[in-house]
Image (cartoon, rainbow, N blue to C red; front, side, top):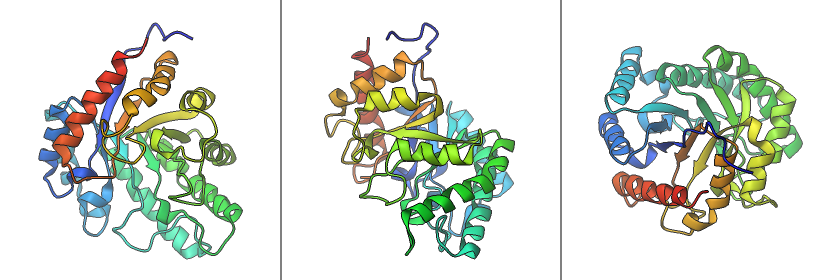
Length: 285
């Protein structure tokens, strides 16, 4: 399989939570100067009570700062991480689920206001089972996504079910399981993403998974397999087949850096990871 003749290259973004505590302008500067074209937002990192903390004026200013740095908003992730407290998407308590759906609608508007394209539904603590079966949790997961799907479509964005391995959540551990949810909801605004890190429960290699689900795959997350920034492990070699498949299939959506070890600081994480992304690219045919 050869690369698409019309392929124009990967669009690299970086998640912002490793820079929590810095101003939005400083976060955008770090991301842009390292060579990324997008910034992906973890809402919890910017608010004290919830996303209503960010007024219409705040959101316009955030967009202006991004544009001034030559950035776009990739979208949102860590959607239900506190604040606010008490949200859960798959609890048997319907009143809590309804409260969570309502907050999800607020997140959809934030994403739309920032110009984001996708909302990555990871949030392991807010979707794992709570004294119910995994089957029931999946049922509630699909029910909730169906509740918010039309709103997402109205704001021209997609909610993407993230596969999380069993060390993180007991609900939806593979891309195949994520696709089961997508097929059940059966709505164009509900799709999947691929995260290199979250593949411990997969039985197929990166490139096979990407190929099988490519037409429902609207986002990619990348970090080392231990959650560190790129270059601290063997991603520069191990991820090449996956990136090659993405290139062969003409993937032009975001490839976004999401790390879990913030200790090195945003600038080092951004710069070193971009160096590795470019090295991976150099190995592609």
